[in-house]
Amino acid sequence: MTAVNNLASLVTRNLRQSGIVVAFVAIVIFFAILNPTFLSPGNLTNIVLQYSYILILAIGMVIVIIAGHIDLSVGSVVALTGAVAAVIVIKGQQPWWVGVLAALAVGIVVGAWQGFWVAYVGIPAFIVTLAGMLLFRGLTFLVLNNVSLSPFGGEYYQIANGFFNGLLGGYGVDTFTLVIFGIGVVGYVVSQIRARRGKIAYQQSVEGLPWFILKLVAVAAVVMWFGFQLASSRGLPFVLIILAVLIIVYSIITQKTVFGRHVYAIGGNLNAALLSGVKVKKVNFWIFVNMGLLASIAGIVFSARTNGAQPGAGNMFELDAIAACFIGGAAVTGGVGRVGGAIIGGLIMAVMSNGMQLMGLDQATQQVVKGLVLLIAVAFDVWNKRRAGAAR
Image 1: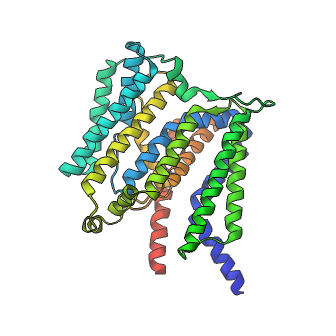
Image 2: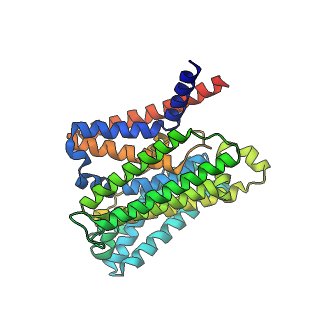
Image 3: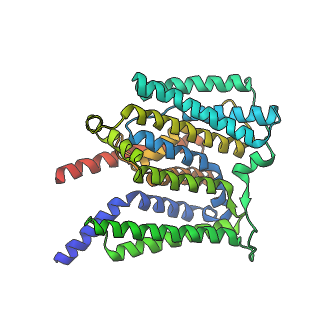
């Protein structure tokens, strides 16, 4: 009987820790049953291309939220940086990389501007970024002179629409894509084994070996299946490479660096962070500089995807990014959250949007469903914390 109880406790604990992944899998299965084309190679490729910029924003947004802030301006920054790139590349006839560098520079300046008001003046981030949402949207209209600019064409267009394929041949399947995904799986397995050994060495609790092996096998199978689907379509999207690099880099920054630990400390307990010698103002400043940089990358990707710049671009992107973070497990009070969770939350938003579009649901219904999912996710987080507090 004791063994059964221990097994039940183990299952419950692992499911609770991986609840967002279980929810994601359930949503995918649901839409796959309703529409067999949902998991087709072409549609999976479209999901990657259409929602990559939201995932990029979610990476930066989760860091902002962990520190106890919020950024309402990222949609306007996406529009502004795309507009700057369009004016330089389309109107100015400059090389594509000049437009990219200019957009990145604008994003960094925007982040420094907002970081200054939040960190050194002491204005709450909600107010600063709300003002930024209006300010940068207005600047977008001024930069574009209230008209859209298109097309980019050429190399700039390929940033969000190009593919690596055919480099290693194959029989109807792009071998290069499979090789890259295989390398990624090997890297993941090695990192997980090293992390587990490190926890054991420091006498920290780890999941049972059967669960650990099952997790590795499941992740490897899903990743390679996804890679095969992309390889069967058009190959490896350029934008997926950009996204993968950002996920790896920011996962390391948040989990393995002093800066990352300081971000969690500020969001978890500001007074304790101050007493511990954390340079709160400096950290907060760079959090917003980083958010501006990632918003500019998202702006480049989005403008390349749409092959132009529009005054209304990026509308509501900030809400999608914030929702992705909270669905992915970030806490409304700060101090909790992970890049991986934000990515899964963003994928849930992407899968729901794509699935509902395939079902032919109108935009109003889609917004209602997204709102309910966000509310349920935050309510579950609150309930889970209360339950954990009561258990203590």
